[in-house]
Image 1 (cartoon, rainbow, N blue to C red):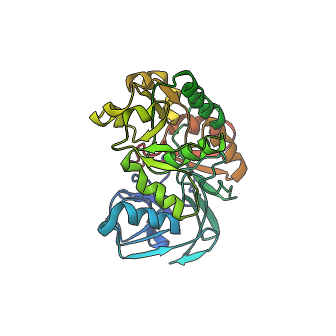
Image 2 (tube, rainbow, N blue to C red; image 1 turned 180 degrees about the horizontal axis):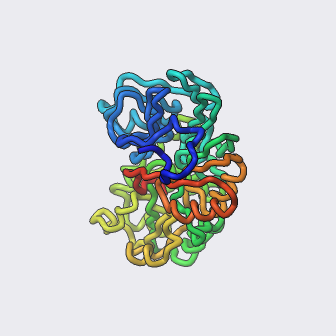
Image 3 (tube, rainbow, N blue to C red; image 1 turned 90 degrees about the vertical axis):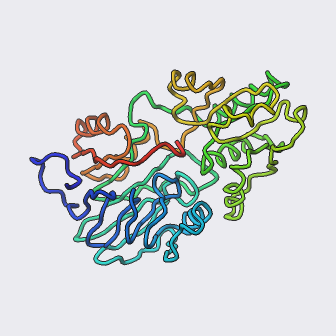
Length: 344
């Protein structure tokens, strides 16, 4: 099965990149990109667990992604790995590979592949909003652009990050006797919310669930200052009134949260645009803060890279295929599976 979904379509100039059971396979380079099953050689775009899995023979990724995988997987991380900084090409078999920033989380990268006169850029997950915790997305001209489509529906138009953080700070003013428990994914979203709060002038300590502290320390070791963070365990309940507490998304349903004074339950995610989803999750204060491009940003990115052929994966593929087809692009959906929601 190739990455083309229509047997009547003309042969793609990038027919050397195919779909295999393990994921995207570059046969002339001898590697897979973000494989969902163990492979001999894996190129990893970023550290989220649906893209960076254990069990591979060797791993090629940015230095930051290598550090994240080592921290998460310990002895399951392969002993053979190569840390490739942004902008430094490497030859893999018959293919030249270069990483460029994706703006998703610390270390996230697009993979630019060049072979047989064709350049393919595999975006991995990406966002276009400014983020002090990682380098910004860098548009790369190419012949084929393989883009994510997590929020590829017109309903997903994210508000400004400053607006959403302002809503959180306003709620603190309204409810000074209540803790504000904000659900954040451990990698990327947590550190970004902290940085957005600091940008908004919130310099007080932020209380943290223990599951988030390790990656926060890793970010700081890689030059991302986060300000004062306090492990929330064993803190006096009265001291937590009017404080911000960050925790994994499911923590508000745990017995752990009972130690907080009448918490306002918030969640930072692009999915909070869907009110029914927030209500079903018991979220009182939904914060639409996403680490993925929204509908308009996906559309703009395709125009900026200028690839006549666009492959769309792990998301709302059909709507974007239809939209780009009307604009004159050769757009196809890829049938990749195994990509979930960490970091949305």
